[in-house]
Image (cartoon, rainbow, N blue to C red; front, side):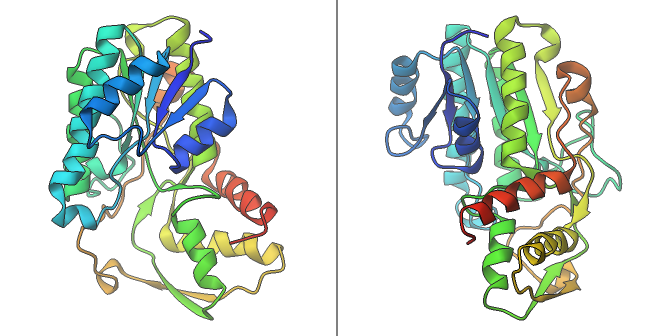
Length: 295
């Protein structure tokens, strides 16, 4: 792989941080120096870093807030990535663009493949789908990696939220009728770097397009919470009781896909990459949390 740096957007985000921890080639950029709301900063950063490959992990991810702040969501999830992809196309630099399971409506009843029709149910999903389309339309050598339910020992995510709430509450209620594939940011970073290495070593047409990249296996939010507290109990933490509830009992401004499981076979077939089982990935996250002294 070229020794030119990998430009990773996303600042202190979960994936960008994991990428930086996993490879000395990664150069992470974020606000205020790099900001999709300031288009000039995108080109300036690209010129300054002169990357051999770009990983776009920056995004507007506030799913509920996006319902009333659509302009900001589309600037970050469509317009900024379009500019970045155009720069990559002009420079002949490959780009790995991170997307989401929220491009699906969750009604299939089985794991989604890349060939399944997309049908986002909210602004966040629609803006991310528009970003996919913009990156692919740029003409850049681009791979889109859709992932789901990302967690890490840093940042804001479900695992850390559960552990934080568990410190002060004896009982929690968690949605049990939404299925998905939890993904450790560290596992996703490892997969992205393998993809990046393949792309940088020699481009093949089969590398282009959309791929699913999530933890192997699936569970519900309730099942994930149970597993989080199993790990916490093994560390001697006092853990709360958890009661399952329906999505209807926890209304939110944006509708979540009820079943957003991702079939990741194509990633394995083309790049030889399969992420670890979600339970193994969770242990990786919780171990890092406990090693750092907890929440």
